[in-house]
Length: 325
Image (cartoon, rainbow, N blue to C red):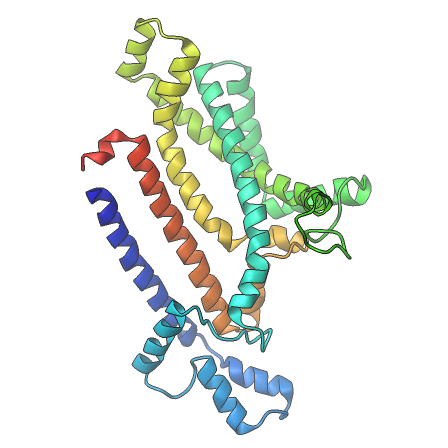
C-alpha cells in the first residue's frame, strides 16, 4: 500500500506539472487565434464580442495568475471553453465526438499486437533455434521498419481500391445511423480491419522481440532449472514460471502504449479518413486552436498517467517483491 501511495503522489504532482505546462506553452506560441478569427469574419463581429471571445479563450488582459486560476477552475469543472476552429462548439463536445473512434482503433490494434506478439515471443524463446525463432523475428522487424502510414496506403490500394475487399474510408458506411444493432457493429468492424491491421503489422514485431529476449534471460534463472529438475510439465513451466516473470516488462510497455492510444494514430486516421482525436489534433495545431489543443493535450496526458498508475497496481499483483516495499 505504501508503494501505491507514493506512486499516486508522484502522479498527482506530474498531473499538476502537465496542466501548468498546458497553460503556459500555448501562450508562448506566436500569433493570436482571436485576431485570426476576426480577420476571417472580415469585420462582421463587434469590438465587445471580440473582448468576450478573448475572455472565454483565456486570452484577455487579466494578470497571468488570474488567468491561471480561472484555467484551473475550468479544468476541475469540466469546462474547457469553445473550439476556435469549430466555434461555437465546446471543446468537450469536439473531443467526446472523436475519442471513442480513436480508442476503438487504438485499443483493438494494441490488444491484438500485444497478445499475438507476446505469444509468439514466448514460443520462440521456449523453442529457441526453431523455425519460429529463426524466421519470424527478422521478418516482423523488417515489416515494422516501414512507416505505418506507408503500410496503410499500401493496404488501402491493394485491398480497398484494387481488390475491393474492404471500404476505403470512414468508420462506418455513409447513411448508417450509429446504434448497438448487430448490423451496425458488423459494419464498424468491417471498416476497422484495414486501419487496425496496418498498425498491428508495424508494432507486432517489437512485442515479439521484446518478449523473446526477456524469456531467454528468464529461462536461465535458477527457479526454472529447479522446476525442470522436479519434473514439472514443460507447458506449466513455460506459462506459470517463465512467462509470468518475463511478462513484467511487457506490462509496463502495455501501460505506456495504452495511455498513448488516446493520442490517436494520426497518419493512419488521415489515410483512411477515420474520425479520431489524432486528426483533430492536427487540425487544432494548424488553426492555432488553443482551447482545443489544451483540451486534447490534457486528455492525452491524463490517459497516460491513469494508464501508468493502473500498471503500478498490476505490478503489485504480479510481482510479490513490490508488496513489501
